[in-house]
Length: 366
Ligand SMILES: Cc1ncc(COP(=O)(O)O)c(C=O)c1O
Image (cartoon, rainbow, N blue to C red; front, side, top):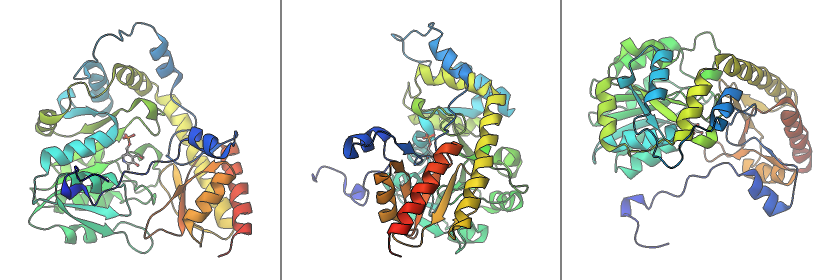
């Protein structure tokens, strides 16, 4: 370790992503690998997106459109907002970081849930924000009063992943509306909707339906999950034109590549493909959950494209045993040491996981 890193960053270690398939092939010499670790869409993007990439009219020697005009116009039509209310990012991950850098100053305070997506904490630490990680309730659900109680006079940012990664839990519409209306004016509410397309609970509502409830609101969306374009890194913020103006103060000039812009626009235009792949995943989410419960395991009811399973022993050991079976899932940190998170794959991938898990659990001690 060098002493070059700024002292306030020493509490951070690198974000641990899902293990890439090739890495497991290299490490264990296993050819037949199933990756259910990064909540990707196993059905892939719309063929229209792939076609758009092949069209051949892309000028690779030119920088991308720095403002992503065509994609923002298409998104504006899709969401019923103006293009000025949209800011593109190199995945929504970049936008989380950008929001922290633009709106968070040293001494400000941030609130987010725990366990939740680690990048809210990383972005806050990077900006020397103080933060409160609000524990989800014992049943891994959000509690809006707990979030509101954590807000201090210095709170500037509040991050909510809805549905939440890694629990799959969500804040119902009425409660989300209450949260957005009850936060003090100075707080920017960031509602991260990376998994919104998979949410089908009757009382779920996207924050895009609740924009009237709050002016200081940033809604994060991504093309990495349901749209199946994780490789191309495209996300966006929906907010007020003023919010987007502020984000552009620090946004890197060419942060979203041409291929990403072109493919995302084509994918957005193919809503029937999106619907079909979401429906297939939601069906499998149900089946996978039932199969896990039938084996006596506890799961967290999920509104995302993943399921959190309590394996009732060290989750990391189960994760490692599953790797030897050629199945990559995700081990969880405290307080979820006995849980693993599995992405909902295609039916045959889920079967492979279920059989591997059965073998692993039979062979391991509680
Ligand atoms: C809740 C949540 N937000 C944001 C992201 C980042 O997605 P991307 O940067 O690919 O848009 C993820 C990725 O797993 C996530 O789970």
